[in-house]
Image: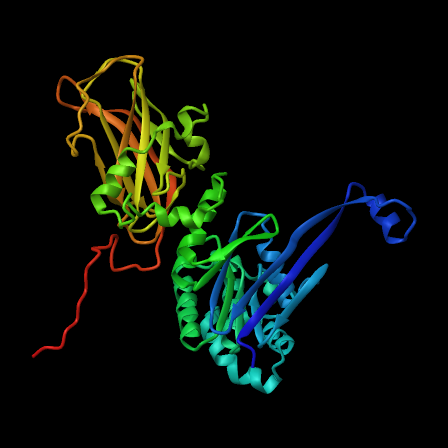
Length: 448
């Protein structure tokens, strides 16, 4: 028996793009001597292997070819060239709607999917209770799936995919529409599959899940394999890709960033000082605002007197990249640039992390940290940099920043506040209880 569950060899997928329907018809009937289409390669010469029992993630920007290769592996699409070798029974959960007949009821679709995979009706009957229990959609299972909400649909689709005992499970981004409790139940199944030695291949933009569950990651860019390796290394390169930074020698760079001049591991204070002293010219010399690299919340809560105004901000990771994805236990810096429209005594720069429910999790300000400016004069600009280690649990958070101070009467004044400005994704392969990690050192010894 082969050690490989999936082998992809030099696979390309080319689409013909036509400017007019007339050109498509003429090409189909061979009525034109010259091609009337443009070639677009969704995949170009892609090769990678997935060993039995591995959990492999595929990441990349939109249009990288992630979903296309999954469809070719599962037989939904045919490759233009190249070969795919599958060793094992596949169950796939691709984008919403794939493999389901919208006119059939939920029960009928369970039988349809099971039959397509190769099970007899009797074998499907034996698994039906587990499928319906996992989906937990009640009597809707007897209604046509076209009447389902997206959440109900993905519950049933995943319940079918994961309870028919496949040897290889392939999952696209479909889980993103499920509620948090259902996602938790699905990922527990992932862990059960891993313990059973099953093979999992999945595409996700959730870097926390990629980091936690994958043994190896394949990074795609414009239909080609850019690199493959450990989740941490591939996520670092992916973040460089997202910010338009060159990715050559990224693996070596990610290693060398943690070493001092003598080749020894840098201590915590050295890493923090290095981050604090990073050159602020990441955008100053280019003329491009830092904030242009981030997706700003369209429902941001902004207010203040505007005597001082936040004109720019940045999140800088351990590698000096502008990104809103921070790896847990690595250093990062929050920067806010403030323009002062009036003279202000002792301005205070702040930041706060909130969870998606709006609960303040942590934060600080320059007053707490005993960093003071006696007087900021009108027309001046200051940049506040907060450097710290990311100890929050993996997940999604909202960042708020502000510039405040106290007036002559001792009353707190908000000059400019930006609440829930951007989201911060904390990428983690180990979470503990609560909001943050104590980073405990654990030792177990046999008692005398």
